[in-house]
Image (cartoon, rainbow, N blue to C red; front, side, top):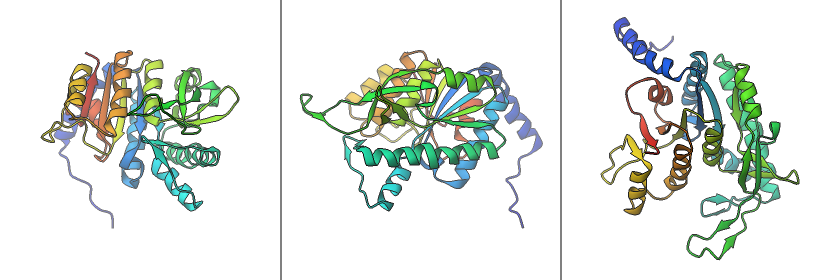
Amino acid sequence: MTTPSLSIAPRDKAEILAQALPYIRKFHGKTMVIKYGGNAMTDPELQADFAEDVVLLKLVGINPVVVHGGGPQIENALKRLGKEGKFVQGMRVTDSETMEVVEWVLAGEVQQDIVGLINQAGGKAVGLTGRDGGLIRAQKLKLKDNKDPSVEHDVGQVGDILSIDPSVVKALQDDAFIPVVSPIGFGENNESYNINADVVASKLATVLQAEKLMLLTNIPGVLDKQGQLLTELTSRQIDELIDDGTISGGMLPKLAGAIDAAKSGVNAVHIVDGRVPHAMLLEILTDTAYGTMIRSY
């Protein structure tokens, strides 16, 4: 026996579709870079919703590019090997053995799951790493100590992006494919680097001159001191919220990349609650805010 779906009156369905039309027209032919992470990436129902959303965007003429993380999956794989993950200032220390696990998990297990979900939903997804088509060139990240900048931490094969060549992504888009990018770069000696997925998504959005950068997270968006959602922010307002302590912790690097993208030509950056079914689609194609939108001005 199947569970009956939520009943929506035909008129209400028509209203929803009509509301989406101006947005579909506005964003037709535009690129949207989506950082896929958090609950949306681990909950089976939310995974299916995400894949359907990505396929729908492609079908209405928008070009989605997915960049994914995989922290929890890497952690689980390391535990299975009896290896404990170490972090310095939020960065995973990545020795050569850990890098092998990172590549296997991100470019193998996680990427192929996402590609499979999108294909199952009716899309044509193709997985890429930074090596494919020379997409992401990187060098070893020099991590300065937060308290004493003269001290530099060695976090192993963690990468800092030198350049992004989007040719392979554009070629796939032009041929109706949906690129799914693992945040792994390569160095001048063909060595691999583990790169923060938010940073890759922000830089890729900038290089592609994307219309939007969508960051799916496990929070409603940026909140004020009273815990209320701030639906729209400028870079100046974000600076003020950081100065007074409203924004801190893990939100800081996410916002740094968001501001950088917004100042570099990406029209809008959205921090979206990935725990809400179809939140990304609702944010893009309706008047309702399901997260925080960041603009440079």
